[in-house]
Amino acid sequence: TTQAVAKNIVAKLNADQLAGVDLDSEFPEGGNEPEEHYNLVATVYDAVKANNPKSIVVFGVSPGYWLDQYQWAKLASKTDYAFYFCYDWSNPANGPMINEGSDMQAIGGAHFEASCRGAMNFMIAQGYPAEKILAGFGFYASDKAPYANIPADLKTKAPDPQTMEVMGNGNWWPNAASIKMKIDAVLSTEKTVLSGGKTAGGVGFWEWGYENPAAPDLSQAMKQQMALYKK
Image 1 (cartoon, rainbow, N blue to C red):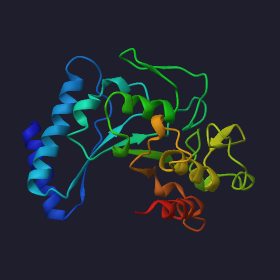
Image 2: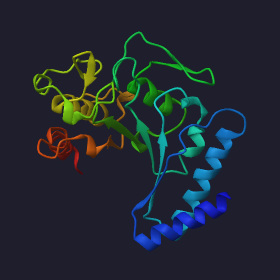
Image 3: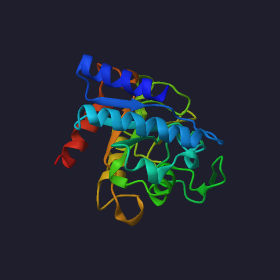
């Protein structure tokens, strides 16, 4: 079955001239599942690279609870990137970059700070390269309301320096300033929150459809800030 999946993915990449594939098998949980997850990713990676070395293989990583179920050191050589879902912590901030004094216990017993920083540093400590991590940021509030619904006064509110989000009407929201802060927190060598002064390989977002096309504050902020890091 794994070989068939890999073969079909390669056929689809060729048929549609796609740049690569993202494998969102997010929740390996105990037993043989961590090894099965690795085998799936590695088999697809080998097949995709044999077909076209320039094709990209990415896998999705859930916020925290399943983080110690991934075989990080082995995945390092069989993936181009891990797309880490920095959003969806809901503790109560949606995707807190820093959460001083908190503790997250993953399903396998590992402990780390309950934040984007804590999760990414755990991945790095387990052997996954920082430069292969893509930090995913949300375009919606902690109650899942799309950014298009953000109260007007929150668009210009200064973000909390730890969560790097803004609080209003009982919810945590992103805004243009918070997106820029979060990008700097993973890509700037001066402002990085990653251990050892490391920086991530890039950022991503979920998802464009949550922004009002007539007021693209977040996507404009992203484009402006990412321009600082183009190589």
